[in-house]
Image (cartoon, chains in turn red, yellow):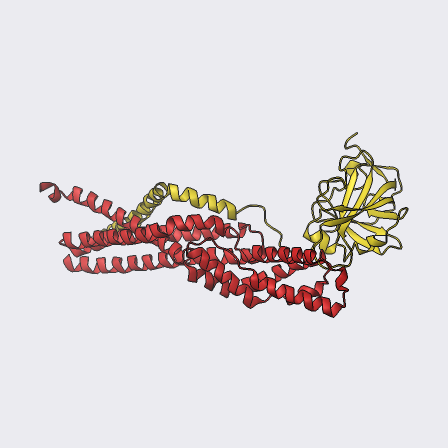
Length: 280
Length: 222
């Protein structure tokens, strides 16, 4: 095949393969960033544990319950210390588990309702309220409204919308990572085994890793310095804390991958120069 | 000279090629991921906005007591309150009602006082002013209100007085309990009923009052 002996053709083909490899590596860096952050159940759990999400959430639930308490004849002190962080953690975790297992996320409020009814009973006995003035319907309605408030606070805003995105792309993401890695590896092997002079193979692999590393770095730095995270608009402080931490972690993962790719490029460049000197 | 050319070629090969390639990859990535990107962008639009949410529990107070006794005031002199801003105070002498008055009847107003329903009017416009408050806090005293009592509303642009004409108990969903299109200035205060009970109720206690004094806001509808 004469065409493969044509130096210009081989160079163009090598550059195209290098481009495809670089594209694959960049795609991998994006896929890994998403895979190890937003698409990882343990990542979200750790993020929530490492931020003050639960403290903020308990405060918000307490404030919202105090509002309904105000409208229901209860003292402000009624809900002070009522919201149990252990129960909140358990219910949020169950909600996250539902989300990642593909089930419709829901909040079971039976423990909350039980605790609230018991607290109301104690309050009535302590306050010496005449039970004939109380209406069972009004109390039931209050408990229902309070548990609705509790459930809506436990639910993580936008998760129901995000679930369709997650379900749609989660399995595709795993396949994409596998296919992309195979393609990248195959091109690297083509470079190594089809070039008599190995430093030339290293040069083309360098082009791929360096371009993917540069692009990932630019992506992470642009996102970071554009200040888009500060424009995050969600309903509550606790959600802002959570989503900010998630976006920051995703940027950090992208940055780490870009540094890794650039380090590999630097190593390949050094190796290329050494091997080239030996040949010359 | 030879060394400089060599370095130049090296830079060309090892810097320019990856930079150009990364630009091409970036463009290709945008083109290839267009369908995914449109999904991601629609999700991004839910999360990001130039309008920042205020998470603080504090509120802004634009109420400064005034001694204005004129019969009219030009609309341009009235600072119309935004939602959750305190713009006045509401008092009923001898009935233990003394509350900060807010525009809007959401969480912040009802935590800190009484709130004017944003679909009604503020004093001075000659229309209905619908004010809500909780029955075990700022509006607990409404249970003592009688016909003929005077409700005072002080704002930065004028002080208003309303005479109580009636009190009634209605179902919460009843639309007969107020008329927001009334052509006379009237004040309606309401809270949950019965008082001093525990739980959410379906009934509301209404206090109706008609304006007896206070500057009329002119220049907006005239």
